[in-house]
Image (tube, rainbow, N blue to C red):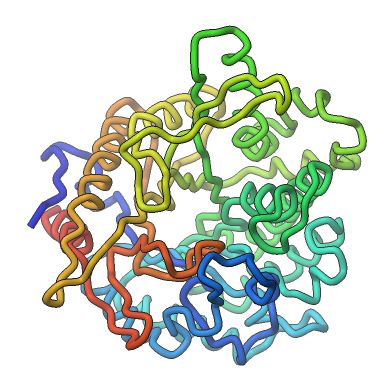
Length: 442
């Protein structure tokens, strides 16, 4: 079996470093009859939006199998489990808590506590209640305040059992994929939509941080951002210039407001009607201090100038994962270094890193050597970044198990645990055994 290894003197092999696995509510839970509808239920029911025509009605049936799944997590020897709360599971339409839904998560948290596994909880991983979307969703400024109220109520109910809270997971995906190009729920299109949604998401983050610090001052409270480092297709000045623009547009648009209290200068390059409405005090709220930054990393993007589109992204070179993303671990090094040089960072956690591979199960085993290699390359980069002086306190494999992969449906498998969706049988893959072996040998 292919193993994962780190140098004996690696700080990742000390007790203070956190190794974990990650999931998200809509991707694994199912149990839709026990919660309000969300925007992904609606999106899945819209023809031609999901590659395989599937939905999240059952997913991995974690709603019913959570006890077995926590035993599985425990068997991997990890220190922490990162998962998200389903907003529509814990809130009624009147804004009051749904105690049945709250109890579901309290039971999970109680079991994690018994197993001495730290709970890293995300408050929003894209499953906006549909009734809020019907009122404008993230295009409506009021949603930021509704999110803060939800954060206030749920953290009062469960915060005593949570090690860390993240307000949002990947606001870029919610805003850009969901409201600007429409390939994710709710499927809206338009630059103005995307920029407005992004501002309201970030405002919601800042407002929620105030509630978190009040209700859970001893927890690690922060946000999780995804980054796709931007590379120029050539040394031509026009390619370099548009690549910087792309980085500001896709990456720094979400980081700079949090750390610097301002959007990138390209804000002023956008048509006035597409700029978000920024009210007095907004940027101060958004730049509320955070205890940690979660970084999700998968790949890089290569850009070149274009007369028609301003810039275009080139097709990713090989090697690629099964979802078509280039495997380029050097980009993670560039990302961590540049963020550390650009901003005054709090402690960093790599909250998602992993690869979709074309797994096959044979004789009850999944020998996913390519995924093990992916993890080895990226763990090596993280280890070097720590040696270079960047404070990185944890690493989470994405994902614990195969699941509903958004617009791809169930076609792409990211898990270190294989899921047979017909029988719901879980099988630890070679990568899962390698991850366990690395952790247990610390």
